[in-house]
Image (cartoon, rainbow, N blue to C red; front, side):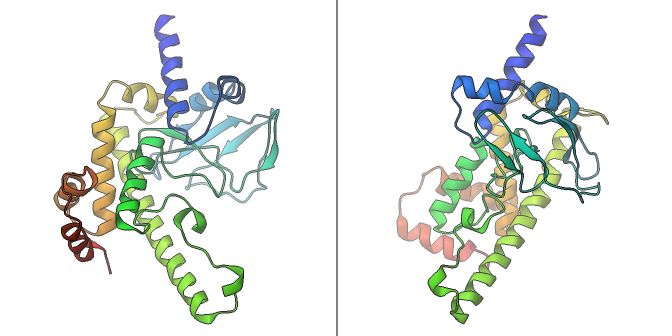
Amino acid sequence: MIDRINQIHKIYNRYRNQANMEWDDHDFYDANTHLLVNLHNLKICHKCFQLHGKIWLENGPFVKQKCHCESKDEEPWHISSRDFSSYNDFNKKYEICYCCGLEVIPSGSKWSSFYCQDCKGRIYKLNEKFGQCIIPYGRHSLMNGISLSGENAQDREAIDQFVSSVNKMNRSIDIVEEHRKAVVKKWVEFLQLGDEARAMDLIVKSDSIELDELKKESFIELLALSLRKTVDEAERFYQDFLEDKWINRFRIMSWLLRIIPK
């Protein structure tokens, strides 16, 4: 009984801390009455390594969250709660963090982040240092600093620049997706989750390992893919620039000019 209670606390605390959402105590426990049921039902597909299974929406009905391997031609789910009613932009309620592969995070909106709070913080710091979006935050162009204003809507040069930026963003998202699949596969094998791995198992079993260090390693692997560098080169960049060991701005900028992919 005590072990079961401890597991529940781990699941609630991890999800609450990493969900990229603002909660007060009442909102959190009210909105996530269904959380344990859903994380018990959702399994990790061993082909695409996305979550799939029957989940319980806030307004009562059960629906099927499908992974990449399954057909997804269906009407958007209608999500409602005490305070709001809306339709999902796409039919997912939960995903696994695209960077660390260790946290379950909310999804379903075009504004949903790809990352848990820990990974999002590292990616924000990276993009801030570069002065551009090297690793995208999510699906929507505005999340990644890409937009076309109304006054430029007839400007061919501005339109071409916008299209080029969106295409580059989509290529970057493909890289993030490639990393997501590889890192979730790695943890399924490392944690010995088995063929019927549940979202709940990923949270509970990973709670006993050194999460911060492993999240940092996963971020470095994603950084290497995004910059088309080796993991060793990406790790040196992380240590030297993102951990603020160097303060010579001219040296930083000259290094960035050499490492940013053309």
